[in-house]
Length: 326
Image (tube, rainbow, N blue to C red; front, side):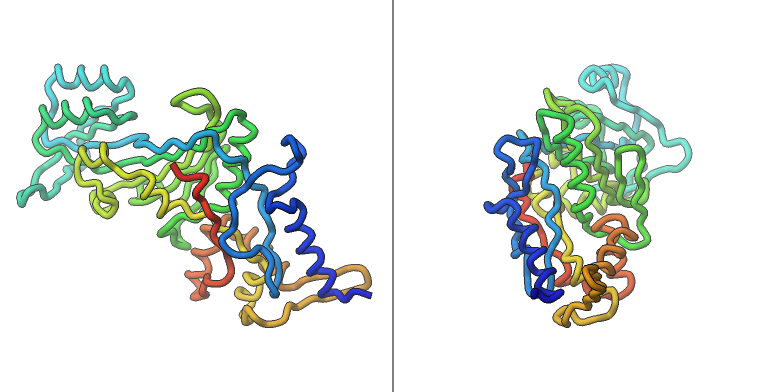
């Protein structure tokens, strides 16, 4: 008769072998299984099994671009230049800084900036007009977007759910909020130097189909300089693939090992399993599941571990995200 531990091992192996080619079954797809990206490390190990997430289908296209950018100007633009810019970008927002002056050091001299212009699209003609009519325009905010484009809204929503449950935002701290508004998730404080937005309930804005939209919102000269954005021309030549290669992190937790970590046990220790007749209770697995549910997202789990001085190494695996890069 199989022991409690053997029953758990068989259960874990059967989950992983549900689709023998390493994919997960999907009743809505022809053939029963759909392709999914590989995990860098094995899903099953001697200490437990990793829950396989419901992978979204591979996007039809991946589109990375500058969604929005803000430029500060040391003086007002003339009426003709403003009309030309508005013709190129009808969504342009032109405001004067009335509450607080903004000073920045450019070329060894301090310059007072009094006008902020926000653009909803990036075009070479826009940058040329700004450079022609303005002395030393300063880029102070950029939203970098990555769209996973699908044929149906259902697939886009599945991708959005997958991203919210497995994406990790770099630089996130335990004190930073994760807010949910309708179908959108926002990681970080509004207006901070580095935030992330995820939503998938809208149509693709640049063509046919539906998109899961990831948006890295960078604010402040220091945050932009760290990523190689120092001028308007840097926006035109920005390497979007390299940026998302570094910042798009998709992880899955080994829930049993996470449970051991948060309860102060060594990761290689034997699992704590309680059996009551036919009922099997895995204490480590339950502790890990409870911690994930309480935190609400992988980003919050890792931030909370760091906040309490607990190492995150060994409790999660990263996906190969090549199929989701631009």
